[in-house]
Image 1: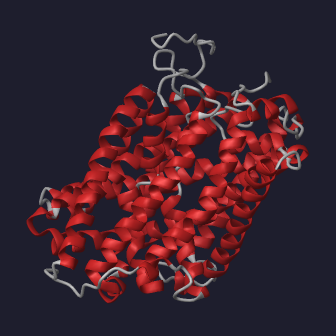
Image 2: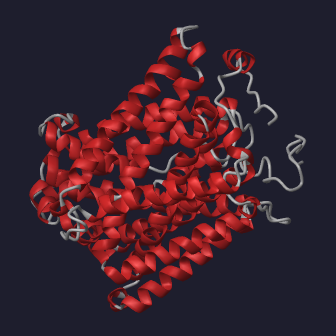
Length: 506
């Protein structure tokens, strides 16, 4: 190979050393869709906590960093593209592992259509094609075509995907920084068009608005940080696979923290909490309103940022779902055809197209119900996200349990930290279930079986997963013969000396 290393992966496996650390970091960042996530969350968060929105962004970062630590240390001993599925299976057995894998694949199915829809909508707005946005047929057709194009990019190769992502993250970050700089400049120059307010360090206090509002804000925080682990799903295709993907995941959460807090400061300072609260229901369109107010004729810059954000995340969200399906099929937890690797591109083509196909079907069906139903399905994401992140944190402590008392480093970073992160997410999961049980808290405001639509969707996905798991267990019991393991002492002690070790032979 060009870098002098030898590719020892079998010809039918994923392409080893296809991308480097920076590429993995960019993919992890883009998978969170920073501009879109901010646009969708900033209004509702401000409606809940007012000027303390930056503090909520900061508080939401804590469980994400702790779970990122679990991803880092589990990847050190098992470089499997199935991440949570593989790790939880090793630590806690096949039943828990299968459910973790199912949760990851379904998050992609639920969100890909919405992300593509946002990319199309904001691109049309940026180019002044507002009438096309209002035409449901045109909008949905362009959304489906975009999903197909981005899926093809994923199949053609990880290197191509990385190059596309590098361009998109650069465009996105430049646009966001330009917006933040202009907004803050106009605040201090007193030339804003809205009820601006000077930024204060006190805005970083997440408890400033009270406990109940903080809980609701943290639920939104889980959504805006979600996706950074896509870098780890590429572990079999990244150079220095034992350490680079985990580092990329950790650093992506830190970079997201800086981005989110900075832009939140600019948005709250320029628009003022009253304007943002009044327009909270506009969701991602709040950035369209603010772009026109702050940037004037340059509002297309912010619209383009949100569009590239949705475009990038459309592609990167397919990655963890398809790689997880591949990993599950290799372990005989799914039908074997999901493990097919393209002979030329060495990517999981079958699982990738399946994820895209189901995502398109979900988008079209839910869209026919109503646009609010699509938002309700996104709200259900927080249940799946909190579940598999928490499961990963617990699996880290369980897998390393015999080594946690060997040093303070092991106890804090491998045991206590991931468990605290998991505990916070379980708490948020319980709070989510309570909130979603009330139909009044849903976007549509309607009742499904006496519950809010997001909770019904979440329960439905969980039940379908359990049924499929039991059926596949009866049809192909091989995977369920696996037994939980503990971390190999040689691997753990090798880490302490800075040596990355690969996975054991299965």
